[in-house]
Amino acid sequence: MNNEKLKAWLFLMGLGFMVAYTFLKHPIQDSLLFQKGKSIKGVIISNRGYNGKGGFISKEENGDAIIYKYSFNINGKEYKGDSQSTKFLVGDSIDVLYLESFPSINRPAYYLQDDE
Image (tube, rainbow, N blue to C red; front, side, top):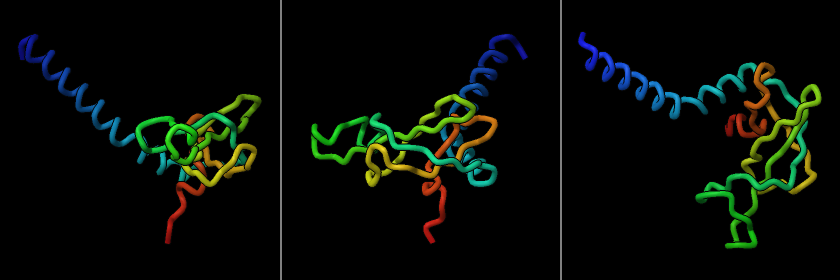
């Protein structure tokens, strides 16, 4: 294999891995959290989260409901996540699942529950 073909092959392999990672990252994280996640209480904070309509938009701007973030502490370090719901208000508590090895990977507990 000549040098140019090798470079092209490596580029395509790298691109393929990046695309796969982009599409599989959240399902893999969700599966790990569901199987091995630790539970903790978080508190809703005033930071706004993603509202699913193109960005971090406040209710005052166009009538969309506000989605707030939550925070929790592990060993004195603060971690944050998106509540992914409009039903929470600042100061409310929320059950959170996180990976003990990587607490920055976390989700609201209700997000991973079956709807059945």
